[in-house]
Length: 80
Figure: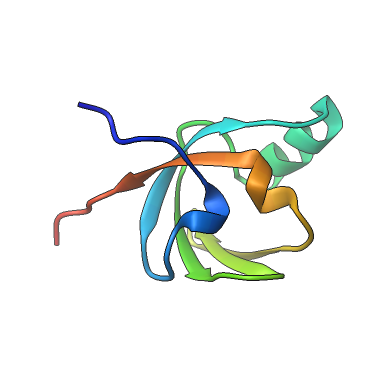
């Protein structure tokens, strides 16, 4: 069973998630893809808020404004 989709801003610090969908203009979706945030990628929330801080593909990214609400993710439970 697949986990429910949530806006990125509802993921707690330290939690991992898989990007399920990115909503917005084609230019904005393309910009997110350039930064490594695309459907199927895994990311970790490092810090919530404005700006939020994410770990994506080994890089730390800062997102400002309301853009994190346009990113829908599926929370992951990673085995240690």
